[in-house]
Image (cartoon, rainbow, N blue to C red; front, side, top):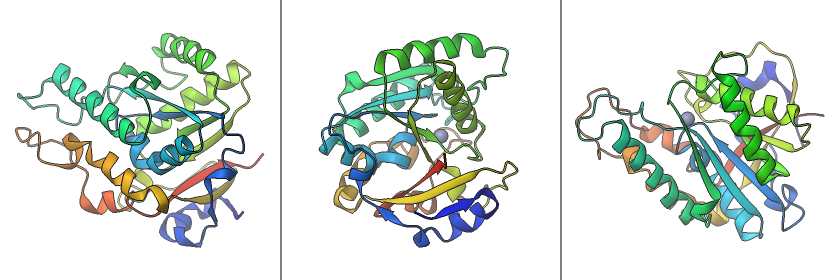
Length: 257
Ligand SMILES: [Zn+2]
């Protein structure tokens, strides 16, 4: 495995194919491994880890998904889809996407935090959220947790990483943490990294399930099409951005222990 430092991560995102390609059995040596994927918004789990989810399910692993925010900031001015309807729509898209990836609806949990306001452990409103995350983690008891990449440009993604790692360490729960990038793929948003830590980066070969992943991404019609057409500020994933998640591999990062 290649080990890179955060100082060279900008290079990593512009030349990802130089990273080693791994197979899924290296992630989950035991078929019953309990896996948790944490998504800041409804769609991040499928964009970032859809291939891993499908492959882990095919191996017989249990895969649960925790969606942190309600996703209602994607179209804040839509009259056709005010917040309650937009939340319901986005949750139904998540369930459809995960069903495509062979994850049962009962394995998905929506925390429904306000989009754009996922707290960090230092936020004044963090305590009840940490308590909910603690209770959840104690119930699902994962061996592997997929988290958004700690330096993702989106604040909700970074807050999700901080909140979940703080909760896991408060529980003294030792897990393998695998981080996935989303917005670092956007060259306009890709930032610099100030914290020096040793990070291992690798790619997961998802070619065998790529068609399934693309079908799952397509379930997110509110984010990939003009389904919601009455909000001039409405968000849509561009085709350039979607290309980053339509590759026959997924990029993952891990802190070297
Ligand atoms: Zn997101």
